[in-house]
Image (cartoon, rainbow, N blue to C red; front, top):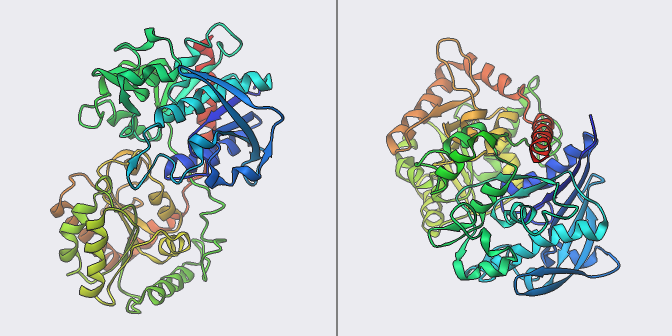
Length: 486
């Protein structure tokens, strides 16, 4: 098969900048595409917080012509760690030398449209500068959704005009909506400001236009690809997505199995695999000691590592938690988010000493130890495009309890009490009663069907959650897009 030239453009790339799953994907998928023999190059903003000023600078500045004049940028070069994948950083101090990727405690930055128009148009100007013309350009979320529009207009008659575009929607809730009078700042021709393009209810919607103009569109799980075509979960764009339904795909994210591996995890005192589950029991005791829980091997530990946010169903957990704590369980919660939730769960440390522990912090090492030491992992999300924690949990033999939505539905197989099959516990209606019931079902299985529970742990740990299969699916999608563009 012919080697592909792939330009991957993202507002976040791990480890340089990350606020969620987008950064994880952007820092991992290009490495696996490179392993498959492709010429992959990544472009991202030159955030000062990424240490960009210490990276190698290319010889001359890059001029990017937007609607309000030419912006002059520096180009810095580094690599995705552990790979030969080059990362080009578009450096513009007025736009990218500030705290926060998209905003600060006062809200979103007022010039976000210009900032990410510069990223999008600048990535294309960089191709001209390098004399390197990709077969496909992979854009990600609203921040780069102008790229397909440029390819279909200002770039259509030059050497970039034949490049296919793939737009990945990592979370439909974020669309890049701005007022109509800012459209001129994009540098797109005004004929693209229509209801069949970037116009949306009298305003500007970058994601909507990107969906219309992309050769192919995908999102990060098959179930989410279906859900976003419904009025209930389409965030106002379900009609647009149904129109593009024949070109809309779901490709599940993978996880970095070198970092998330209980056999080699550097954050664990007790490493283990599915043949040495006694060491997982030791990891549980270590977690109980670290967090001041009672040392009780027989009591199941239920865990959450999450943003304390409405999307994650944290309000429903708050409503059900006191009933859940009437069971013989221990509960661990790690995360930060909405102030009311931080205060509420922090108070439960005092209400249930030795049995409940909330750590209001983002702590990488602790999140690994929680995945290893817990017995059950709770994810009652309202929506979850893909989700990663349920895959970490499966790999670590910590059975997920999930609401059957998005990637949670695609990755967790529901427990069958008759056969013992499954890898976790699913529920459908997000309310306090349903949440209490499914947790009770999981706890009852832990105590009263121990052989089933153990076999589910082994089955979960035997699954393949890596990026190899996902990268192969992206390669196939790129080839489809290239054929369609031609």
